Length: 219
Image (cartoon, rainbow, N blue to C red):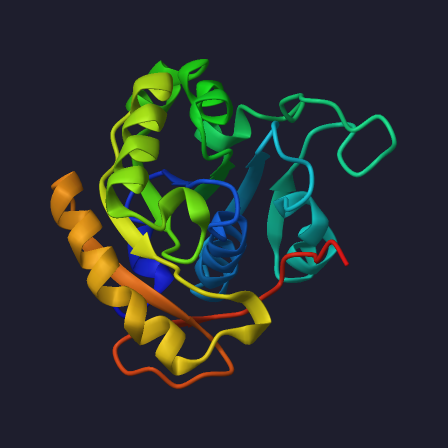
């Protein structure tokens, strides 16, 4: 694939992956890409477990691009508690396309199971965000265990792998290139296609999809 937009073939595109994989950054970039292709889009912040990196942080920027953000009522307040957005059903019945940013472990993915039939009936594709440089997924077998746990908890099936291997601001072209064999091995073990490899927009790596680093930093 040559763009994130090509991932959005169904009504709902679910982006999931373990903590630190960069799944929220991928989800937000995907929503931006959909909007730039003149398609009505919304992104739902369903990461109800981890409050530190979330699509809610980008609400204003996305609104400027015409992307509606479905966020929990108390997101980014001193009572930031696990909750679904009040307008959650727009994910399935709103105009255009939807992106779901989902917590990447069994606990986080359980939120998908609550609306299992809605995803099936609306039409969905779910993608696993892989990052070679995070301890949980440094070993392809470990990544496979996370993937299978998400599928069990959600009752939904992954349709492909997004290789988002990076080291944040320290990412170089070599960082991206050196992780590709690991992502390829993981995809083969999962029996899923490796759909694309991302790269930060400040490095040049052939045959990758450039994305912006727009999620908030802790420090």
